[in-house]
Image 1 (cartoon, rainbow, N blue to C red):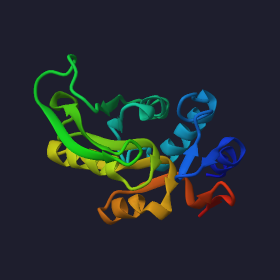
Image 2: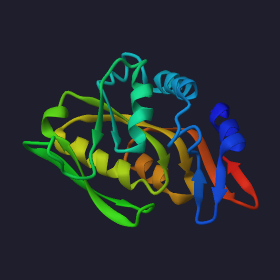
Image 3: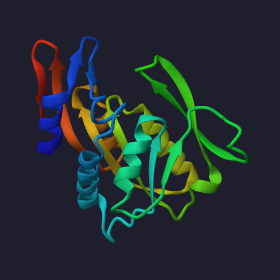
Length: 192
């Protein structure tokens, strides 16, 4: 999606350590009109009766706002996997270990079993796809619940880190609004 590539060129900040900061429009501050447009694109890609999406699934925290805005054209609820058990999660849960390269730690993400069922057709929405650990964990949870994964809508995919390829080999349809082939502070962002 040229719109996402243009926005990254305009407002993205590349730092050493393979970091692309998009906090001015995608993470810490969300450009609602821009994300609503992105949600319409995900609906074009995954919407309609053929896909039959019943839920949108993401991982806390930065994916929640994005998923909510993207869910509007689908007219379905958003479910998010929590990274830690809290008092408002009771009963049985689906869990999966997810390694965060950003934080250098493994989280056990969880979703109450009451929120995901065998009849659900799930679309993942996430801000970044790098190595794919978060989405692999969500896919494992969906498999355990008997739910069907319709696909993954990704705002920014770092193709050189292999996560998208691994998910596609697993049979998950991945559609990314921007696909980055390489990036550096000196060279900028190179898109696929």
